[in-house]
Length: 336
Length: 280
Image (cartoon, rainbow over all chains, first blue to last red; front, side, top):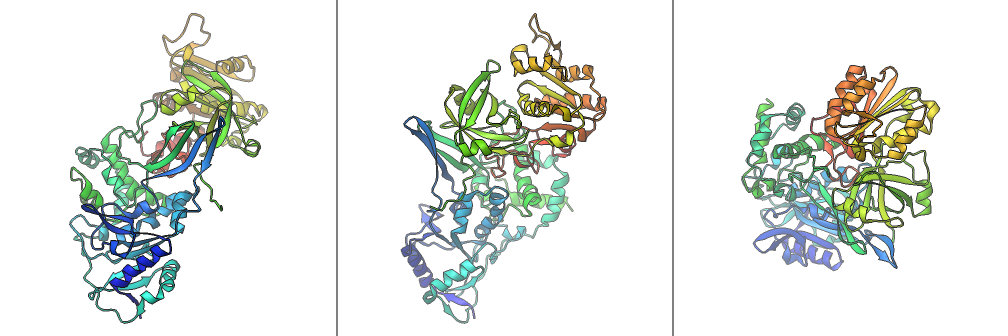
């Protein structure tokens, strides 16, 4: 028998978690849009829309302090950031294309050198994913191996039911703990029929074949044709659940300042610019090629994963209409 | 507080000495402030570090001193950007941050018993200077050592005092050169570009390893010369010097194709470089 939670109890669960001093993050209305934001109570949760930015910022913030520096009595001192007091967090209502991204990003933040800013937050977070019931033309999760009902990356996975309640599937121990700690809000019982799932209108891509094509087409007219319109604005990277490139910069003065790590984008001309002025990716088509190669070849070469969950945000955000789904389809066709 | 390790936290080091190599290239000799770090910091020739000017940020340079010289490290930089301009404002006794050592290194032990040819241009001598001193400090482990080093002009030659020292040594063959027009009246080296001076010097490729560092244009014209001299791709080593931020394989900017210069490099054989996606 599955565990069932009613919508009222799902909101009560959020109230309880907030009372337990957990950081609860979920889709919330923010002006004209929905964003993954800290929820102050259950009523804040706004399900049914894909938030504007992905939920990766819960683990990999847009900008964060990584150390502070300054002078005490004329002597330079550096202070670490207190990561032990990062709060226990619950991400609730993450759609499969967002819930799936941390398990992709874990690889890059933990190979050889551990980025404990990311990993500490990951360790202290529980992800409650939810099956997706609405999509638009930009969605292509099914093309890259995800699905509206994919529990990949979720600790607890909710499936909306026709009667407005949710069937709960504990995917990991963290998910089980969340349920058992709030047992009174869940009840065992026969699930009503599931609400209709979203059905993205995309064919499944052969990612292995696409990668094979990328292996042998570092030089190809395709890159030029995309770059002819790309403005290099970086929106696609910032809005992506899986892009992980960042910059490190100092703010302040030698007497008192902060070193910060913040999102960056490989589409920017200065991203790879040497101090000498030499730039290995000096033109836009090399930069866009790197974006596709990183997502569908390099990351797979290094970590055995594709750096894309098919959320479609880059397609919606692109001011000139570059459609990564179309590009992948073109490659898929060319790859035969 | 139980704290995990912060991989971005630098060690503090004091600038013990400053040497102006050229009008805009400067060497720092650095001593770690923490006794434990000072005694235990170890690195291999070819590795790099991230150096902080607090308030301006971090820059990536190789460790230019030799691992055989203990108690300090040296870096060498040209003032061309926000961080290096700020570093240049620092004085002896001031504090900078050092993260590292990072990256792979030259497999010096594999060179034992072989002849070595160093080929460097301009400010790319520092990544080879660490190897040169490493090898000179273990001189009897190597055969002939030849150094071909050139810069645009006499003023642009770095480590001038060490060039003089190498010139004096009977167990080193130094061929220094400047580009045509870069020589003053009393210049005692050759006049010409590094690749042609190398070809003229014609070191034997037999049982010899070539180590090449320089601007992309110099590398481009030097590799065919080495080939003509009989060097195979796996007997030629170079370093790639891409822009970096994290230095530890996360920030995503130093890659050449699927090769992360910070983790898989910066030291590569010519064969490895040729096999990469050509995006330098």
